[in-house]
Image (cartoon, rainbow, N blue to C red; front, side):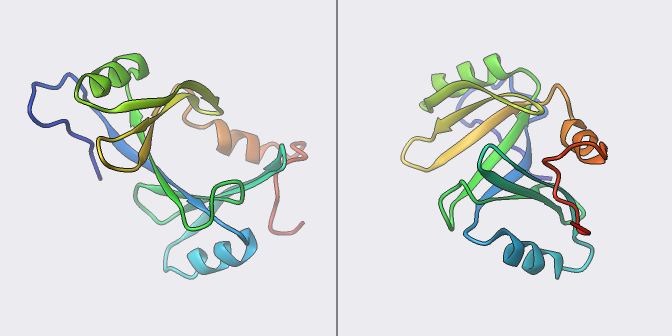
Length: 150
């Protein structure tokens, strides 16, 4: 399990865990096959909606790989789960992180996009609905779910 820790000050952040790696893809089918070749890998869900194709690959332990054709190819955005989004963002800003997008919705809850001092971006996500995607995928009437037999 990968945790995010802030150095140089007493941090109030707790339970900050790397939940997803959001990976850019130019060919979701090819990438699903490649990731699925890893022993124990499981395709948890796949959706095509709003012009995007996104699939979740579970490798058996966190983080889950999210393959997305709307992300830049070759890019990887770490997404950390936090208990309190507002507090986490405030604390990260206080130590030099820059907010690129303060609050946006995801199926699991609100998230923020931050840039690190001299480094790339990460997202932090307050997981209010942890089973949102699995529930939507299990709904046989969800016309956006891409199933293996379709």
